[in-house]
Length: 118
Length: 109
Image (cartoon, rainbow over all chains, first blue to last red; front, side, top):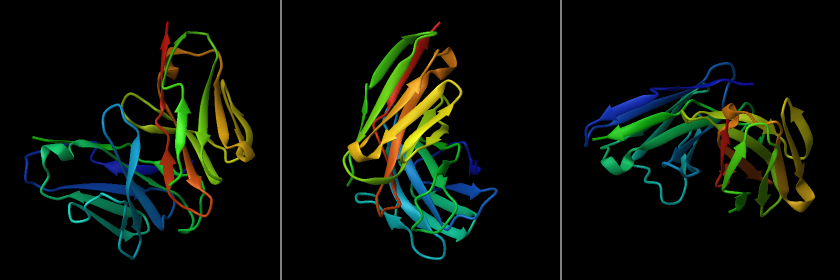
């Protein structure tokens, strides 16, 4: 299957700082990537759809100014948590698939990034 | 949006036992995937199965799209099967994967 890599796996930061998480598709090009958030013992909730060459599409209730998404190339999307606070502490995980935006094929996930804000 | 319900929410098995996990969804789908989330949080793709039946070793899955459900079978369970199993779907004409609540499986030696 396709390989999606995320970095960093763990990050601890002080309240008020910004943190950037990278998501890369290693062996395929991804026009669209997706960012999810998971709280302990809960399911994954979609935060936003990252579109190469255009603005991200955010789910209802997700602050676009807090969670900045940039899809700089067909193999890289970044999520920046700006002015992080303890309530932003969570597990962030990205996914991607081959094919265009309308394609509903198999999705592959990165390893996830665990953010702890002190 | 589409609703995805998984049952049971928790399952405790003795090593060697068989089990069936269920996923019900509320609308037509063009993608259904089963995942195993390991203790480190990584999601492992088990099956891409919008319809039909597939088998991979001790695991198999069946999706009956017309009746809007999918089943994941675990046979001869092992302790390494422990973790959370997620079903996720993409609504027909959509492109976003929506997750169910998961089934937390514990296999005891």
